[in-house]
Length: 209
Image (cartoon, rainbow, N blue to C red):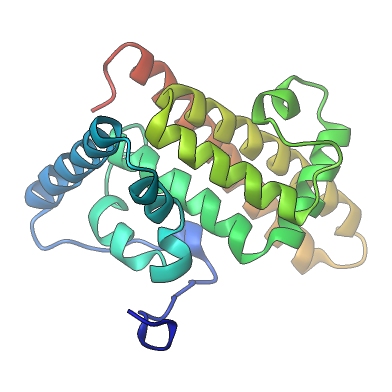
């Protein structure tokens, strides 16, 4: 299919809040788990580089809606829920790599932990470096240790959450609305980090369903 006739990309501005309802929650849950398991199993069994590349670049060509319809209603600490969050983090970086870089670099300076090392971004991490980072992490989710991919993404989220928190403090005296938006973003990323970290532990115990 030519680029002229490809499906338009839809990027909701509040992607972390975007949810899609299902008419039968039990059926939606079964479909979400089945597709997530089948997806990982197929890629790992076939080890087809073209398939992996298509999955990594899926949201760039198709947007997030198709994935959301399957996985967005799944519990955060489940296989489909964790895949959904990996794709959301990827899309947030691809959609605005400059802001991602700004927040990451501020967080890297302010956060005194091993998280920047765990995330694996170069120092300093510019926009393109972060795009490559998240694509590499997603590649590892499909072909390597899924728990490592979850831990790296959780670490990235903690670094960026720290950056957003400190920038929010900077803007509070002069731009309170922007400060509030950054604080909200930090809280969402912190929640993502916690959920992804738990999912990684569950995966290692063969208990992520």
